[in-house]
Image 1 (tube, one colour):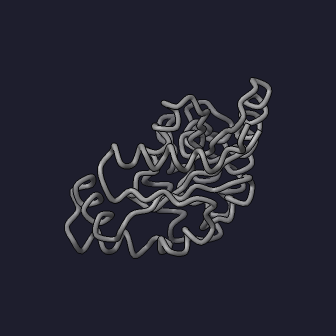
Image 2 (tube, helix red, strand yellow):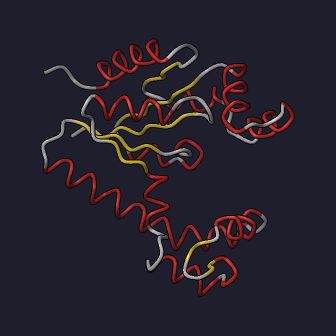
Length: 197
């Protein structure tokens, strides 16, 4: 089974591409969702977080804003949090990949936001990067989040430049146009990634 990482810039359409692959019958795992699942109420990871940062867990539920405020300003705290969560995320992913392979899938896709930044894309056989122009990205982000132009600029400037992400890609899917054009590009890209029968 071929493993494929799927990532992209903010507001470039990564989740839309993931949905289109699912429509094709391709198994796709959203690692960001796995990250949310492992800190669900009652989970061991949430208990660990609560013991370490009691103000980040309110009535048995993770207060993401409070935890984010802690780890954003303290690199050591962020590393502690990653030590609690990342092994669990990777274990869930490996279990899912093994199950998907047992089910006979020729390929499986793992979707995550920061694959290139963290170098985790190296875990997969291939990498899809969903990209678009800066102007399109800015317009989509403003429309999606309701941000003003200055906030849009700050958010995009805080990300790794798309050109850097694209360098790591096996295939780049450009998403500068409409949904139908994107679907055609996804079809072409997927054909390039899977070996011929």
